[in-house]
Length: 141
Image (cartoon, rainbow, N blue to C red; front, side, top):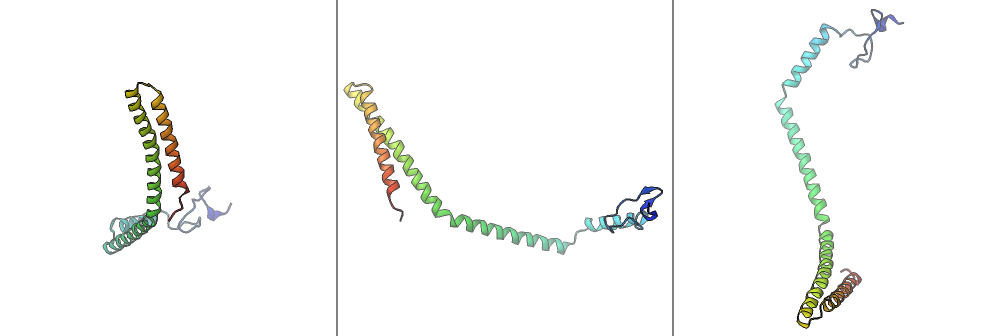
């Protein structure tokens, strides 16, 4: 074994500061260095800390403005799709519900129990799908 790499027959610990196994800074001097380093961390530099906060604020502002721009650019496309989906839903609900309601009223006064309800509800479904097909065939502006 290399005598420089051993301390009393055991392998010397690897130093991550100097990347060698010949450690002259271990011991008392190492404790002094560690205490000096810990003092630096407990006393933050007011100017450096303010500058870091300003940089962080600038970065946050840049991110917020980029996010607003991204949301602003996709707004009209989302609104148009949302409106179209609501129209399709309203057609389905209105056709089925309106047909069922009118069929129920006719059954109530005419005494033809489920026939009017089922017939007009089926007619409402057909009318709803025809209107939805018309909307889907329409060319976008």
